[in-house]
Length: 238
Image (cartoon, rainbow, N blue to C red; front, side):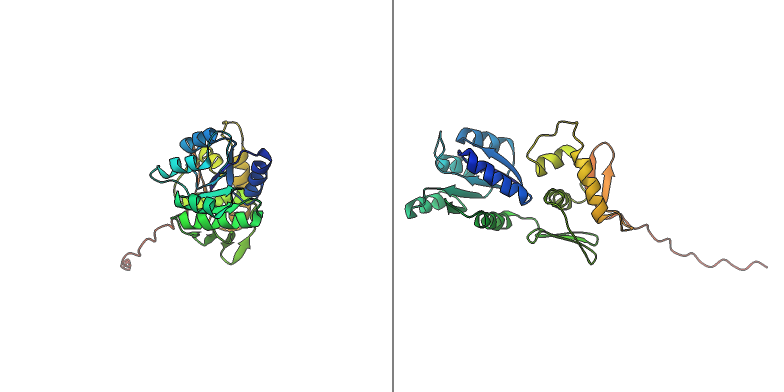
């Protein structure tokens, strides 16, 4: 899941980014309205957290641009403007939720997860063979064994399972899970794939994470070899 935080106070923006990244999301931050619009045109976000009072424009102008897109992400307004009129205006102009500053991060995170559940057309429970991933409870089980994953490991596994059977390049994985561009030199994806394999594959005969030569990785259940039907019994030799 990739989120955009639009907040002109850098201290608050950094706090939000650290908290959301700790919860397993990839996060971009924009300190101005114009920077936010550039981000929105350059990437597909799963959710936008939007401040109203930006130095160069009202956040509602950004909200209007998002709502003019055919498939815009959910928008959570996070603003010190908390009068009833402000909240009603934000919701009427297309915001999916409105949270007033000061706020508790646990409440913000709960609202983010609720909006992502509402806007996410893909299943909340993913499965490949006997490996299951609960996107809401953030729980991974293979067979009967619960597997503990770090936030980035969970993010990679969720992205792969949502795209099971589809080869994913290292660039795609980095851009989806990390807030960074892939420079062609980092081996960060390979390191995390090794970690994932050690937890979900190494102790099992059926390996789910596949290396796709020249591309990257994908997850799928290998096909079982077809059974060869038994032929007619050979006639006994005389």
